[in-house]
Amino acid sequence: MKKKTAWIIIGVIIAIIVIGNVGWFVQNQHRQQSTSSNRSGMMSGSHMGSSGRSMMGGNSSGRARRNSDEAVPLKTANTAPKKLAVPPILKPTKTKGDAVYYTLKAKQASTTFKPGVKTQTMGYNGSYLGPTIRVKRGQTVHTKVVNQLNQRTSLHWHGALIPGKADGGPLEPIAAGKTKQTTFKVDQQAATLWYHPHAMGTTASQVYHGLAGFMLVDDQNSQKLKLPKKYGVDDFPVVVQDRTFSRSGQFSYQADYNADGTEGNTLLVNGTLNPYINVKTNQVRLRLLNGSNARTYHFTLNHGATMRQIATDGGFLNHPVKMSRIDLAPGQRAEVVVNTAGVSAKTLALRTNGQRVLQLRLNQKRTGRTTLPKTLNHLTPTGRLNQFGLKHQTIRFSGMGRMVRINDRVYNPNRIDLTAKPHSNQIWTLTNNDSMMGGMDHPFHIHGAQFRILSINGKRPSATQSGLMDVVNLKPDQKVRVLISFHDRGIFVYHCHNLEHEENGMMGQVKVE
Image 1 (cartoon, rainbow, N blue to C red):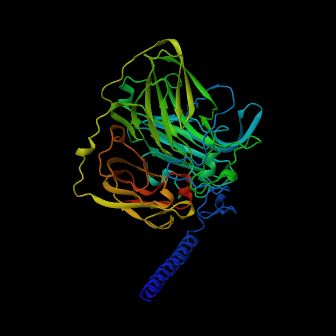
Image 2: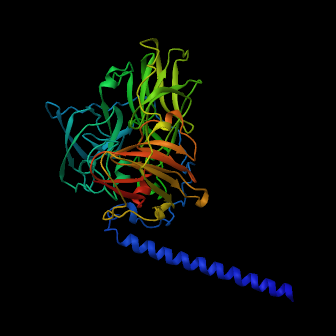
Image 3: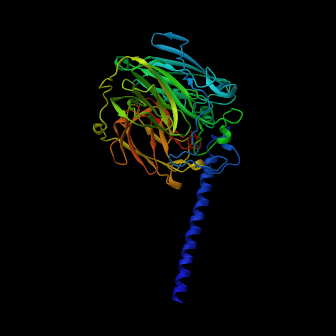
């Protein structure tokens, strides 16, 4: 009898717990839906309303992208090797002293990736991707952005330390058929930056269809350093993207859309399938950019060759660092130099995720330097950065699919989440609280600022993580402390650079004034 009573009591307790959790879930869902309905329709006009996809989402097959695992495995492109397309350097429409003037036209077009097949794409001043904009520190850059698309867009200068009005984030959309002028002064170290759209509801699909380009910043230090610097000869911009082609040869973004990050099954490098470069020098510099919506890349060289990393997102490291593998999350950049002097093979291959990214065809009579400068920069070591008296913030990433949050909130363009002063520093503790179904990565990016990593789960960053950055990948249950340096005035967003998460509201705003 006592045992029977005990079992009844246990059953009642379990029932209470279950009912309580269900009630909490319903209430929480109602709160989230109410919050979403008040976001001024920021998600409207995009793929976000597609039917037949689960709330936790993924694509039509129900796959969810977990952690750094691939939901869509890469496959080998069945095309003949093709010389890597190198984006042309954009010529100014006008120069006046230190002022340079450019025009960028975002437009719909078609591109031949595969023989005899035209794929519908988007590009800046061309059919796919955009030209490279090369500027010098101290110049004032005037850009006319013409939106020739049938949907809104914007142009975000990713990694640039510029005022909020020029940043091109979600608060600065350009309506279809309209033009916008932006002006900013280049005031940062030499670095590999890039530009891409950032209007709410259209960012992910526009990037997927080709809207992106490089912006290279030069300064006195970069001009003096004895590094490979002949553009397209021994210094190559390399944007790596994954795309899926339909049976008719079109990008199938809508069909493959995944609320946890859309991945393609085929690699494109500068818009080239199965690319190669001819290497005639002992050293070749690769400016690597992960331009994918969601996939993380793990770059290696075959034949046991190594590369030396010389720069991160925001500029040069203090010293070259020998690397056997470099991991880049969406939006991240890394500059590496490959020394081919001791390589007897006729080719090298840059590889990632089991596939060849880029073939390096080695000329047997290579020339040029075989050593790198020992010192590239003079950044204060992270262990000696002044942290006394700085404001501290905690930024918590959580959720998946369409239920992603930062500090339990979805993005609201009318809400300021944090404040800072121009040319000031703060310490932010970034945490990835996502452990649901094993958790997933959230690459953190902030506009209009740079940061230095102080620690990752309490440990000092590696040598290649000690440079200036604007993206850091947060793995599940990971805590990263960063010292953020704010620059100009304005309202800037910070967000997950998984573009589908970004558009699902995993974004906040900091006002610098």
